[in-house]
Length: 160
Image (cartoon, rainbow, N blue to C red; front, side, top):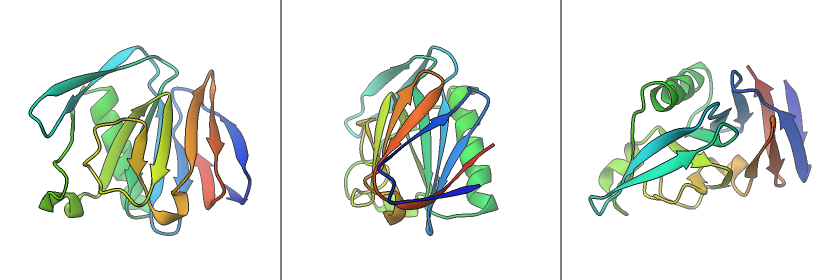
């Protein structure tokens, strides 16, 4: 495990079999490569279904609003549900009371920006993801065989 602080940019090698964790003091993020061309279905508040097409190098990111073993197990389970089971992502309407009960939220694509000021689960756009304050402002870009992490923040990086 390495500690990252105030570094502007970091590239981390990431294979489709690995999970990269960014760990803040109040939440953590799990990042994986899609590993294959696939589709993720997204149910919108308007009652529509949007299809997000992913290529093998694209990212799936799961943001948990807690830390530790339970959060990491949840992240692993959510990744399995999306990649292996084809579970859809459901987006809630803004100000939905269930939003405050969410323990994890998901985003996928070739670029993801983390933001602590948005309401969890209410953004169908897949380039923004609610995260803890320590990770807010971090930008993650998919590259061939690795990810590029940009942003000044204090967090630990761990790969399994």
